[in-house]
Length: 437
Image (cartoon, rainbow, N blue to C red; front, side):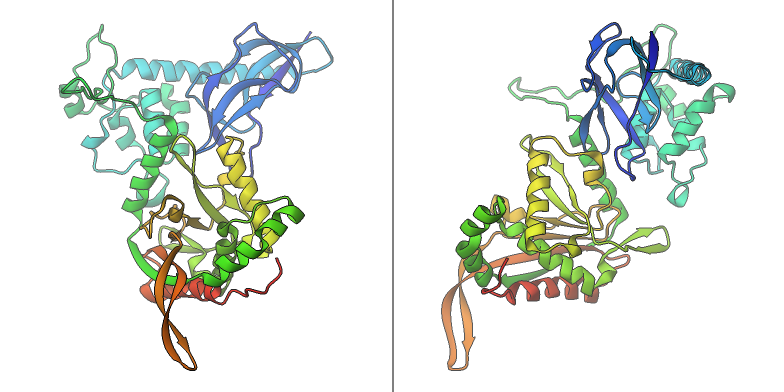
């Protein structure tokens, strides 16, 4: 018999950790090679961790809602074959996990009152708040931490480092307000920070947000608090694009095995405009501007359950229309099927969202941090329009849409934000109706 270390696999170069959301197997269960053992979640993507070997699950080192680092051992599987594990490494890992577990358990027991973040003037990210609640870290402890993030904010690494050393440090004095609101007694159990609302008339249905919706809620609020949002709008004549797509879409699908939607056509224009205006392909870190080398376009997508996810087309400026269509369809299909990998949503430098899919003429989208801009594509409509010709002006029916550009006024002024969206419009209106795909 030998023990195999089941580790959290690498999920992309930009993903360093994941949260365990569900164990699919229990201690003692038989596991086949490639069979899923547990479910994990990163920022927005849920996925499964399969076993690399056949054997029996003998030990689980982390519980549901624990945050685990990539490469960290999360369970042991006993095999009958020649899988050999370095014994000293195993003992050290187990000892470390046990020590951390004891310190977390002791800290959680010591804090009887829930964390009420409304009593603090400091900003804490949704991830930090979640870890604090799960590990029983009081608001007094959080405010006593020396954050290494922007403007002294507490980061996930700060709070995880604190948890590891918490058992050897004196706990800060409990916050008086929290103590008054939730007096602690030896027999009292921790109470939820906010009680679930109660239906007044008895007919309302009250449903708690799921994990992803809570994350999205936190991201949206954080973005509004971080960036100075401003919008520019422009109307675009896309008649040539509509006619060209109607003409070639059947042949395109037959030759490429892919459906041709409007999205890759629009994203092709956005990628070109970003090359013309690299000032939109940046991010902000404190007082520093980071100019991105690659153009990675995020495409906001609504999932069947109503939640939002933003998979990313990497190096979008290097793709022709066929390549863009294949990338967009692949990410869209895997998003709907829940098959996206964590790295599929990482590394975006600019985002496009198609609000026209739901009939909206235009919208004012919220910036996907840490990016500085997002473009909303409105619905394409047949409208009467003035058409200029050498023989004079006349009224005709044209296919038009609105582009809505939200940008971060901290680093993007109106001249850049307006010029960028105008350039996108110019590329769309200059679309060659006789082009090949």
